[in-house]
Amino acid sequence: MVNNILAITDRLTSTKLEDVLGGTFLSSLIVILLLIILAICINVSSKKALKNPLETPHGLFLIFMIFYKKMENLTVELMGENNRNFTPYIMTVSMYLFTSFIFGLTGLPSPVGNLAFPLILASATFVLIHATAIKYNKWRYFHRFIEPIPIMLPINIFTMWAPLISLTLRLFGNALAGYCIMTLIYFALTTLGTVITHVSYVGVWGPANFWVGSLITPAFHFYFDIFSGFIQTLVFIMLTMIFIKQEEPEDAEELVNQ
Picture 1: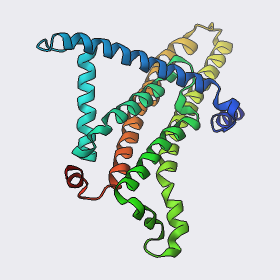
Picture 2: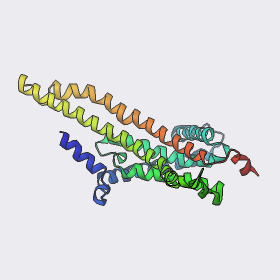
Picture 3: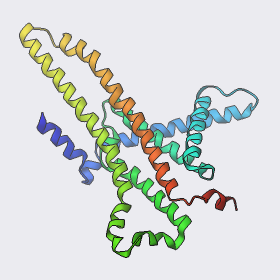
Picture 4: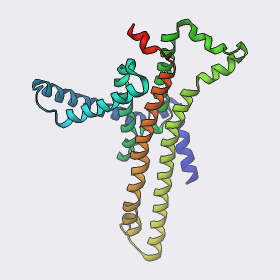
């Protein structure tokens, strides 16, 4: 059992092309396809709603408007009014991340269970962080690497990568931990079922293999796939907004309005 978990871990952390472009890559494509279909449905619903602007929104369009408003308020609260245009990006990342986490319920591997995909998402945030810093500091951006004294250059360069490493490992670590725990739970239930079958001659559809698993595993799946996915998605987008906001000067809104 331990060897199986180690083998799975090695495959998930692998950077080889054949491992990255495996099950998790297919899962990611399916998640993206589902989100594209959802976007098309929302677009169709919005066009129908705009034909009767005095009519109260309902259905899928209403749900989307509520979600958009919540995300916009969160973005403005953490990043300020001048960064309201980050809302679509934050929405896209949150929808992809949460869908990827709960996608494991289908039986297919979750995209965030492969180190490559959390790294890609964290890299996008990393680029936005430094793009924002360059936007406001111009050439003075490079001065940060020799502050407060030039001898701090190696440490400052290493510190620059901290958000990328932190965001990547947080996502991947939680996804991998949940996967390993669920694997152990299923292994324990299978072993228990085998023992009871041999002792009491209960069939493969007996209480050990069916009733016990049906009662226990949904609760664990709810926690590790749905609840944990929601929390990790919220933490990721909040840290993304905070890291980007930290690169702006205190008078950033005044500079934008001028």
